[in-house]
Image (spheres, rainbow over the protein chains, first blue to last red):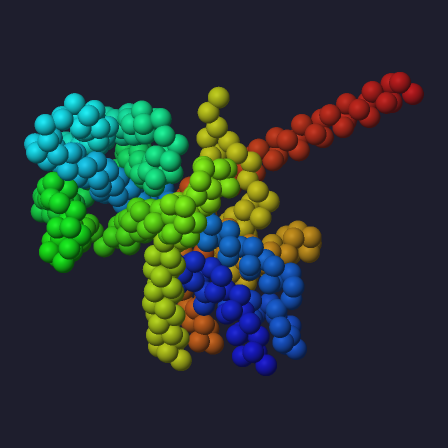
Amino acid sequence: MSQRLETYYRRLLAVYPYEHRLAYEDEMLGVLMAGAAPDRRRPTVAEATDLLRSGLTARVRRGVAGLRDAGWREAAAVAGLLSALVLAVVAGRRAAGGLMNVWFQNDTAVTYALLADVLARAAAWALVVAVLLAGLRRTGAALAAVAVVVELGALASWGDEWRWVGMGWLLVLAALTATLIFLARRARPPSEILGGLGVLAVVGGLALAVPVGALPYRLQSGTGGDLYHAVLALVVLIGIRRVRAGVRHKLVALLAAVVALPVAQQLFADALDVGRVAEVTWPLILAQVLFLAGLPLAAALSVLGVVFLRDKVRVSVAVTRVDGKSD
Amino acid sequence: MVLRVTDVPMREPTFLVLTALAATPQHGYAVIEDVAKMTEGRVRLRAGTLYAALDRLRTEGLIEVDREEVVQSRLRRYYRLTGLGERRLADESARLRRQATLADGRLRARHDLGGSLA
């Protein structure tokens, strides 16, 4: 009978964060069992409410404290640097392709005009990256805000509403990047977090993707191109591995959101068959917002969920071992 | 005006837990029983509330673990007041006393005024 009551109490105590359970679970079980009437078979409603309320409060408190901890700030610093690099590379590849056209075509006036857009965006984000690597975090945050304005200006300069739909993910990525860099303004500089080799791998891996933009499209997307991009991705991952273990899963969660953005854009375009849509309407914009906000959020939460479940299994194993020793 | 932590009035469960630990170290269940006795049954702390308070008080350095023992295969931890906890409890006790004295004085004045008006 008391074993059954204890099982109920243990289930209720599972709502507490694992650090709290490791510190107090056994002690709390003792108090709960000592306070229970001999014929009690289940916890009272008041007991259950108290444990659930206290457990959830402890979990929220630790969650909020966790968001403020140095780990999240460091993860935001590296994710901000990486996504600024991605934005510079995306614009840089377009610029490389445009410059090749200038090289081979006589009618350069039009091409130069088209290039102004991508060159301005590439330069703005490259400057943000350089400033962040120099350790000037507050200046980096200010320049990232300027780069977002440059992105907006570049889009507006086309005077084409379809441009906003097609480049929507870049705009969201720019805003996300500026936010990450702002949140990381008090973190250690990314160069310290990644180390020299880490910076070399991450910056080198992404920067080497730029010249590919100068190649004809069939070469970019062929087997050779895929292999080249896979090797570069591997180099970037090796760089990310240089981040200390406590920060790594937070960084992976943030990067999952970054990587999910172009995927969300593609899924949105496929799902609504955007190529065949005649005009930009509010429902279309709302659908795009839902895709671009929902998928990255789901990706980041999925990573955190997997990490949470892994930690929970570890706690269960640790608690089982403690129980085993005390028997 | 900047409020210090010590300026913020203590919540009743916190005050009662610190009072329960003032004279002698006690374990969790003994604190619950002591608080119920001190308040003549008005306050019966529940385990969740008690351990939220104990965890916070330990983090703030107002209490610490005195000793641990195993009773019927279960961990029993005794807590005691720290020097900081003693000062905070004394401050809170003095604050409550000042307020009670003030309230008593006002009530006396009310009765005196009532007597002279009558």
